[in-house]
Length: 286
Image (cartoon, rainbow, N blue to C red; front, side, top):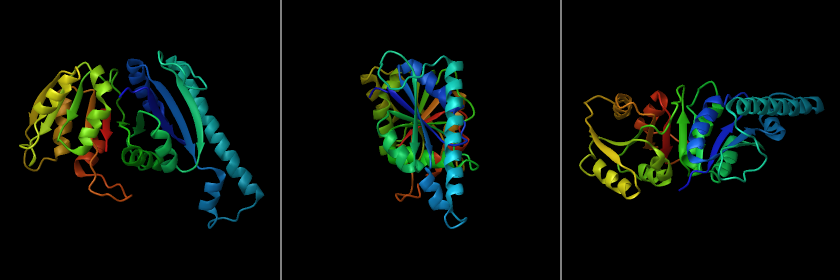
């Protein structure tokens, strides 16, 4: 699958700089378009949430509308300033396939339905690591992973200069990891180096990293297979991150596993640990 459309969702008060940097570094390698979608509750959504707290009148409604407009204008100005610094052209509509450019879209409504529908007509969604002080980040991650059906790139503080210098795949043979591989073949093909790490857990004998390496070779991707011993008491997520660090990985790829199938989106232990502690971007799919 070609990765031509990279989606960066953002909202009021959210700094998208790190994600834009990550999108650009991938976009220039993949000749991809960077689409920034500003998502904010419309006045009707704000009014519904505030109706039981404060009395609504014409002045209050106008103040809410003005606040939404100002927030969108501030975010768009920050986006345009970033484009100017990075030398990325801004166009009104995605039409070219031979260059990286950016587009800006403003959407009104709740994050979950907006991101679900917008993400499904893109190839990759780029989100921040969840920040308890910014509810938007957690909502965007949950939606991107479990509702969109596209790969999700989770970025934190550090963005390597070349995200595709060394991709480490955490392989366990799961459905989630399989989906990630199938949806990311183009990206893996662009990587300078690929390593498949298989943690020695209770399922170790069932699934071999060498089998995935053999599959990748059919797609022109040469990968090294590594078996990772996990000491008793060591979280698997911590062992994977430590191995990625030892190998100077620029990107970690793994399936996003959840123990829950309800809309609470409770992440499994390995997934949660990696998201909370990874020092490099993490590519995930569910």
